Amino acid sequence: MLNYRQLHYFWVVAKTGSIVRACEQLNLTPQTISGQISLLEQTYGLPLFRRVGRQLELTETGRQVLPYAEQMFQLGSELECMLRMSPKEQQILFRVGVADVVPKSIVYRLIAPTMALEAPIRITCREDKLDRLLADLAIQRLDLVISDSPMPSHLDIKGLSQKLGECGISFFATALLAKDYSHNFPHCLQGAPLLIPGPETVLRSRLLRWLAEQHIQPRIVGEFDDSALMQAFGQSGTGVFIAPSVIADEVIRQFDVELIGQTHAVTESFYAITVERKIKHPGIVAITEGARRELFTDLGD
Image (cartoon, rainbow, N blue to C red; front, top):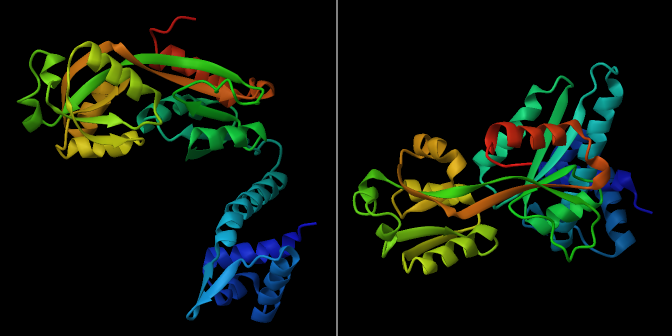
């Protein structure tokens, strides 16, 4: 059975970067800490640290162990805080996973209604690839996953995908770039430097198919799974970039760019993926109701 005390010593050393600093935090001797970590390594026959000069570095096994230890002791800390609170002070924990392809502005506006709930709520957000988030959802490490696609049908996970909404896309460029590519949309995109979503996004194939149908061949100069990075390159004038039309005004203000054109022929969708028994979580209810009431107002029931 895993020795949690030994794992805790490993975690503190990994977080502080040295046994000396871990000793100061734990109020223990170096011999105690190093001895317990050695016992942990001997139990499983795998080294967790290696010495490089006078420094300790995590081995590959150590790097794999650290995120698990991080989650375990973070949850332990949260549990201790919860137990110390009176019933009136206790917060509802809302653990949200966000697929890294979803625009951050959309995520904020989706989650914002939870801040107005009467019951005190504590939100933790984690961004990652969709498959890893769904794996954590399945074992109840997350309450909700926000994605640009529903739960894949091939996964053996009992859950529910609720469509929060969909919208068309808008094309943006700096003022200097817009001078050359802002007339006769969408044909102005012919030969234009274009930044597009990466291959892991649902939107990419829809966009490329629409461009082909319009007989438009832009000059693709960048591909990005992270929409925030694409917007940063677009702000620098690298190329024309896209964003959901529902946040067009926000993109114009934030990045000081101009709107070149919009289309509803290419849509981007957003989903709330949950396990069935979590469907009544007040945070999830606030997100689904708020999305239809305030963000995607044109989505029918």
